[in-house]
Length: 211
Image (tube, rainbow, N blue to C red; front, side):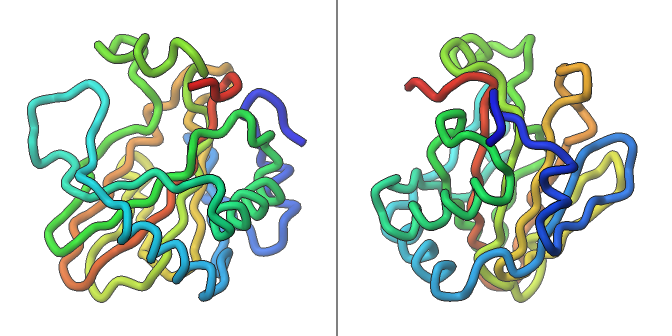
């Protein structure tokens, strides 16, 4: 089992079906059909029941920067427990280093403009969000449904775009090998043009989650 919120390329690639994006700038992976339909539907229902407007750290004054809806999923829900077990098997990261799983819902026209998942070390909210559990290490993101049009996730620096496909998981290391944050992880949750997009996000930290 991984320590300190860390997975590795070797661990991920040992899992059947995992593909690595061929780039020296970022550790970025995908696996298709990671979640079966029944579990996806349960998670979508939980998101619909608990969603609220999304927020961002280090508010930049752009009220249209992140326009989706978000919810924190209850760790005691059977579907959430099942998902956590699957993520542990895939990434090998001790669950003690994970944030609560989040769900996001994007309606037509909603997006999350280009951003990184780590907290900017010089940002106004850095101490607020990193004082207990430290910096974010890995991100695991899962598309829960197919989207009729739009809603892709674009990694601009490496010109790689992931189309939403039900059950597909995308994960990446938010840091460089030396432990510094990696700006090449900049990504854009692009506008949904037709339909609705549901996403699961799981972030891990350098230290145990103690909030």
